[in-house]
Structure formats: C-alpha cells, structure tokens
Image (tube, rainbow, N blue to C red; front, side, top):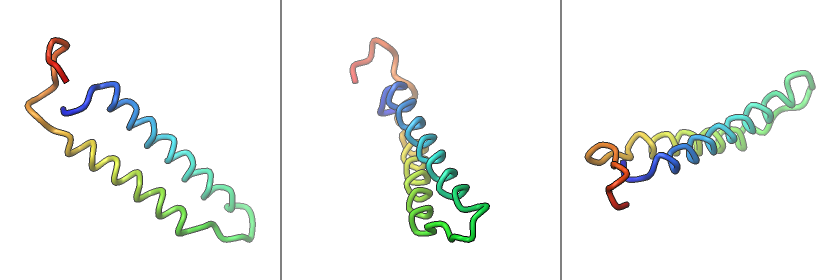
Length: 70
C-alpha cells in the first residue's frame, strides 16, 4: 500500500458518504411523479467507481510496518 490505513479508511468513508447521497437522490423521487437527476446520479456513481478503482490499484510491496517511513 502506498497510503496509510487511515487514508484508506478516509477514502472508504468518502465512498460511503457519496453512496448515501446517491441513494437519497434516487429515493427522493420514488413516490413522486418527478424524474430524478440521472446525470447527477451517474456522476456520483462514476466518482464512487473511480475511488474504488484507485483503492484496488493502490498496491506496493505489501502493507508498511509502523517502522517504515512513508
């Protein structure tokens, strides 16, 4: 991992927050006759997917130990 575990937690938290926003945006229009903002939803989803890909590709020679400098 090139980044610390704390950075990983922060990124995952941001992904979760974006997923909640996406869910709320979609659910806001479930019981109404209005259409949801599809472009906004697609953009949020793309952000989440990009962050997931960055996390998946964040590889190095294993996890750093506490003694390893960053």
